[in-house]
Length: 386
Image 1 (cartoon, rainbow, N blue to C red):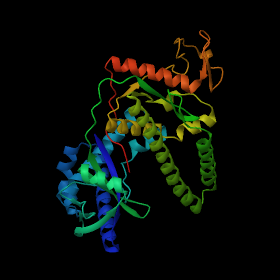
Image 2 (image 1 turned 120 degrees about the vertical axis):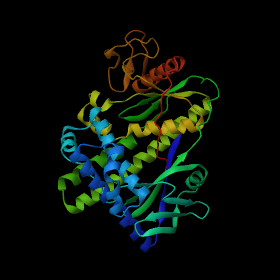
Image 3 (image 1 turned 180 degrees about the vertical axis):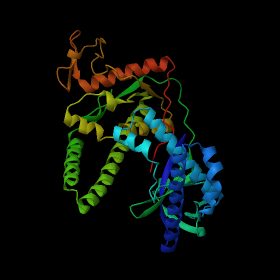
Image 4 (image 1 turned 60 degrees about the vertical axis):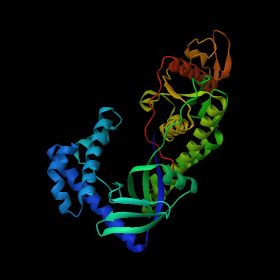
């Protein structure tokens, strides 16, 4: 299983200047190659390397960084094509993508392999290639548990990035998966929703009014700053967006930790909804749409998956169709079973239950049948832990 750990670099002013020049040179080269690829209509890695390798080296890159630039550009076009084919891009972004080459920011992340970057985890320093030569003894810092995790499991490439005036390295780690102890004793169903971010089939609800009030306050501030549209408003909006993202990530970490800990303690697996394309399919009121689109449910699912893999807890994905209209007791499906958003009342057996709890119990039952049929989920391969 692959995870990534982010550590903060502590370069001197001279080292920071060299890193900035290196990152700028790499991204300028990537933009040049992107324009060439777009105009020629050739975006494969092999074709780009054959046509541009010599020119990239002439632009100040050594062999390995030049190859990484080629791969970065090729992967960017591959990802864009996959996004367009899946229909996840808006009409405006689709027109822009077709008519313009991919553009890389001056501070966009640049990958480095072990030939260009070496770690001295015991000294907490790194040595890295730059356009000014090899820089040694650049210090780095991070949370103690993250540093220990890095020293034990780091393997493969690391990305150098510059964000909000600070320098970071994002390192890839190979972590062995824990083996499940036999078949699970049932499943915990997790229903993801608008009011309650996650409702577990045991009756525990995560999220609620306090978080929603904070999200509404953030939305109002965001709207106000967008309407003002001054330089200071844009600067504050950018700063606030980062704060929102960090808060949401922290909440998702806490929710996923609680769910996986409960599954591990009770010897059960976890059943999640397959919400692919949910934003296009679901029909909600305008205030609910704002809440749905302002929360990263995919990130929460990823956090649950990688924590579950580390703990040896099996995870399955199930079809969420009609889970909110199906009775968890008699399995009768009817739209009229939902007299209100929060209430479920079965018209056949008379079961009255909280709607989210009823849906999570249906997900748990479907998870068990998916496990019995051998339909284990193919979990995402990468998640951010720091």
